[in-house]
Image (cartoon, rainbow, N blue to C red; front, side):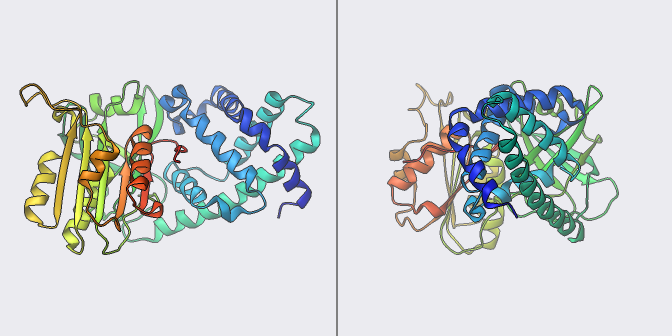
Length: 395
């Protein structure tokens, strides 16, 4: 248990974190990834380049400092972290390493006048408390995964059974276990981590499962990201018959079992976990489903035919697609960018709905803000970020 004195000292650093937290976390990542090459494969270089990882960590550190004396106020943040860590196979021995670099970064960025021995001691104790909490929760989750039918611990070898081009940018990989055993059935919305060897280095990335497993295989659908090392490798080099390694499904973004009408809103490749939700909810047949997808053009959109098939098969499924530009229509179409008016015209009249939203951060910010203005209860708007979790500026 953290002492009251340590809590006060940590909370006293909140203004410094609000003003310069990102500089601190950027320095932390620079140090860690420069000096510990063995850990680089666990971090997405594209997120490092854009600063998204540093911003996310800065936000997490700030939230922890603000609520150091009321940890329940962290809400689902801790659960998201635990699931990401388990997916990427973070182990107890990693925590002392991270703690060492975090405290070193505090000293070097804040300087000796601020980062006094008393402050470093308090932050060391605070980090130790957090590490103990996460290690315990991750230990339990690793055990649950291993004990679940078809589950496992660590990485498991999978063979690419099929490679399917879904659009100009997205390819699906159907993956079956090399050992021939069953696989853990994922909750709609969850993800797995894949490990591949690129230029001799093992690299790990999380990808949403774009279908609910039948107990024998998984499907991921990967967009080629500019500068994305792993997505580029998967697109250019991984073919049917190749072997990759996967961790068991994880993630708190899951379809809740209710009978309220369901609205699924995806931007670009954000549709991948929503496709698993759509398939599962349609098969249950217990609720009306509205599927809305926004894409730059039909050429880059995946799963259009599958959505149309589901709507034809299940009368309670309806859909609408929106494009920035549709070259198949003479003169093009008015821009289909997400807006309050467009969403208002597309939602069910009754706003007592469950809404799941995935896409780029600006897209999700617009959607969530618009839904609030349209009368959808905030607690019914559930979002998922690809990559580091980010705060959304919602009024």
